[in-house]
Length: 252
Image (tube, rainbow, N blue to C red; front, side, top):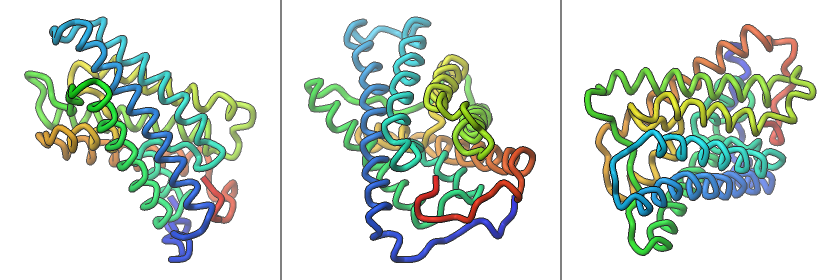
């Protein structure tokens, strides 16, 4: 990774109309995604009368998150790049595709969108609580950390290959569905172990609303490590310095 491409950004960027619009896009995309993902889990709990976790429930979670993220990325793609994930934003920053100041705007909007979605779900369901991410029995924090690193690596690698790479060509058209599918597939892998977050904002909203912070750090550290690794590897091996354009306020 070429360190010179990492940019802090100017203070004026925080008030630039394009940056504000992009932050709002991230807020609404995250709200849509979390409302669908968390809401489907709450609906399943209601239908099963708080029954135990089952393979059917895991499939439901996988599909709802895949479909929800496909839509959330699609509706935000032309405005903010459709990150819908602080880890994806961090990966874009590490690769020199977004400034630090705009990243901070995105992170605030993403976290706020997740919290608002959980509050709305709590109200709309008559007081049902959103479920904070947690480790399953027999799963250590280090097991979960590896899960989150590897799963987020796969997600951000997919983002780079289908949405960021300037050589992507027509494959960019399927970027939102590819991103949604890798998240759905990873939930089938890691959902039974640690909930398969891959997204600090998705973990933050339910944790704040239910005030449950046990092992919450895993759902930040793992995705950020996996995201940085994917960005550095893809950028150095497959993009290279020659393919990069100068960073501007309208970049991903």
